Image 1: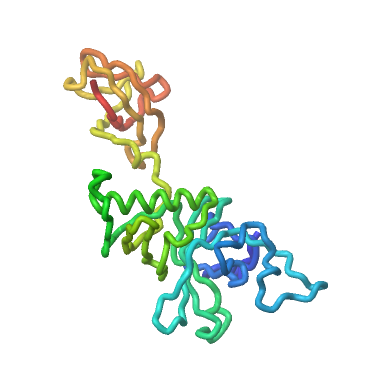
Image 2: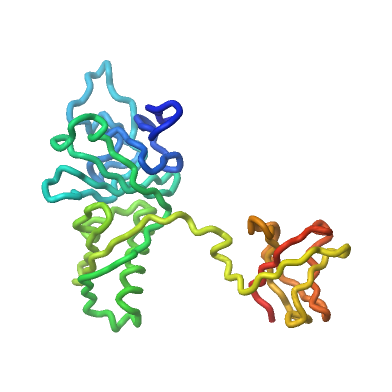
Length: 273
């Protein structure tokens, strides 16, 4: 497990075995644990890439646990560097920044700082877009560029290197370019995995107390219909059951199960036919 510089408070400092599922914004990472090249693979020994390798009797046994996807500088003086890394173990990306060796005053400044962690890349802005054959795809520039980035990072997850397709990285922005002359500058954000509930397309919420027969009243307008629904806690909106599909009764009641008898629940209606 990674070592923690602070026992109780403050950011952690990781010196071994990075797991991006454990790190938080503001945590620090030993610079030696971040590969200097996208060609360095996970599991490769850190000692092979140290600027000053240790002596054989004191060889560094640590291995890389993340891949370098992109790196660059955040300022014109090249004192502050940025990197995007991927952890195939946790399937998470992290955005890092830190001072270069020449720009740092101490070890704390030299450490990589975690700026953001997320499972997906979301394009939030784009400009200088040139897609000569855009009409052939039947998409807008925004749709094309977002899909382009999505495919690129999906391929990265499966082990591909971005190569020349990802250029001019500075931490929050980069340029997309391909061999067919397409290009776009984009700004991105790392986003968490889509929550299951947010992915459900709930059209209507109905809150009612479940009767002795395990039924709730979802309204006469939804009577005698085939209903797809989820059962939710009315306070936390956590999912208790579903999605399920069954027919509602002629009086607008829906049987959700006797295990909910006497409880107040919220029914999320996904589809009513």
